[in-house]
Length: 189
Image 1 (cartoon, rainbow, N blue to C red):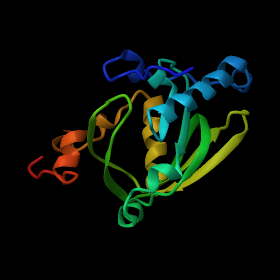
Image 2 (image 1 turned 135 degrees about the vertical axis):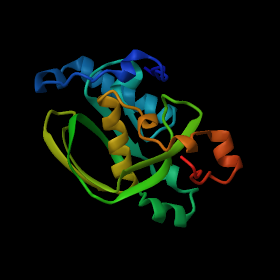
Image 3 (image 1 turned 120 degrees about the horizontal axis):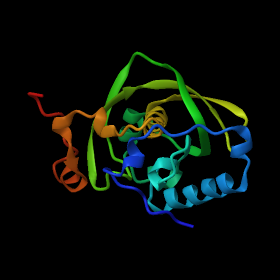
């Protein structure tokens, strides 16, 4: 099943999602939700999708940055962003336990703010503890674009959107972002 992705303004995107117990994680309805979220993320296409984005207020997100997304990007951009393929995985009850002091700013988009982008400062590196789809504890030590994806999805589970963190004067449509050379920060904020 493919979900319709909830858009900004829907109250579910602004709620702190409920955590899951191991017993709940292993139930068929949650396992089905994971499969359906993966299919929805692939169809969008996107690199991450949090349960609130499909109208379900639980602490669950799926992530995958496919090789296919990277093959047409310039090598310089991939290096600058620290971007490489990230295999599919599930984050349940994630918690950022440490974040590096170095911040980086790149344009972000969101499936729940369809058609828009803005510069968003994020920690360049993070350590995240979470449960996987089997209820097993896991740790992700992430840098670059993967760290950004993790922070973005965890924000969703806390009721946040990238527009809460963006440099407001860089907010643009994706069409204009492409047209004007991937907009640089505007001074005078």
